[in-house]
Length: 101
Image (cartoon, rainbow, N blue to C red):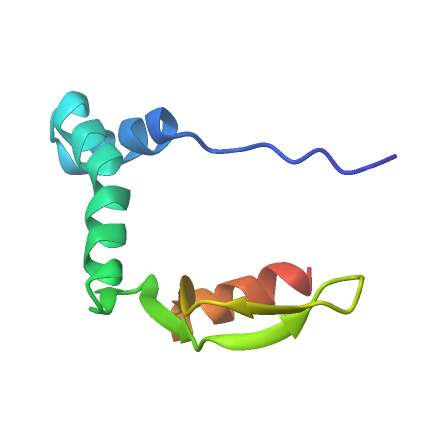
């Protein structure tokens, strides 16, 4: 039987954090909902976002290049960007431990 993957939602995280920090759940949820937008904004402006004990978000540039389609016609791709997450050492170790259970 396939392993069921449960997901943790923003609401779930907000409840856990609010309980452990004595902050209002609405305040925690607001921060969690805003965080991705600020991360993307910083990364698109060329900055690395580093969150202690989680990892860093980096912008990876891919240069413009030439290629070809299925018919052999030459195509020029413009320069593109993507965001890369690099987990911290602590996260890598925890993932490794979870994989070896």
